[in-house]
Image (cartoon, rainbow, N blue to C red; front, top):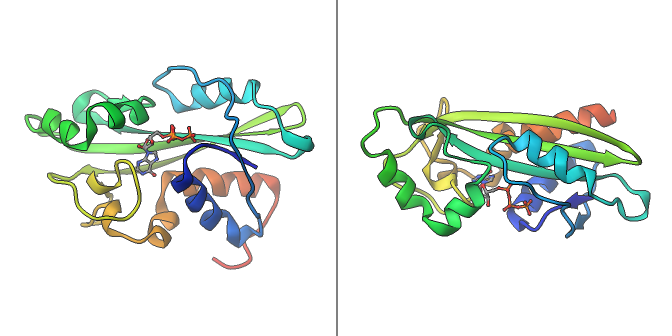
Length: 184
Ligand code: ITT
């Protein structure tokens, strides 16, 4: 079960975990979310208060964008920053900086019975000069993954799910669960 309120994250997680034969249900109760810049601390704390419906394993995932030219902002506050000031304001804040490098971090906490296991993934890249592309969600239109010329907004969900921070963390979880990909 994936405990989240974000439909985009559900779609991506389904695509990432399908090759492992993992069918994903979703669950709306995410546990208590603390304010902390580190996504690992956010999921560790939330997992403590997460209840697993019918004893089925349940996981949460928290991600954040860390922009080096803004001293790591907006970090795990990404959701609030996007809602409050939006993409263009981030580009404006960065206009004076000559460091446009950034990364996405993802932390997944899996709770099964009384055990909590955390898995992480990171995607390095740079922040584009303007928003580009209609795919994905959140910061995808301004994030250019390392080795790419296009933003995540310009690539398909399938391509994003081969390289993303979320894919790395979820594949680590699948490996820990001992499930092997049927095709890769
Ligand atoms: P939950 O219910 O799972 O907490 P959420 O939307 O709050 O959903 P996160 O806290 O993990 O999700 O992510 C915070 C924000 O960071 C999210 O709303 C997006 O704006 C942005 N974000 C996260 N992952 C992203 C990705 O893969 N691409 C672009 N933006 C992303």
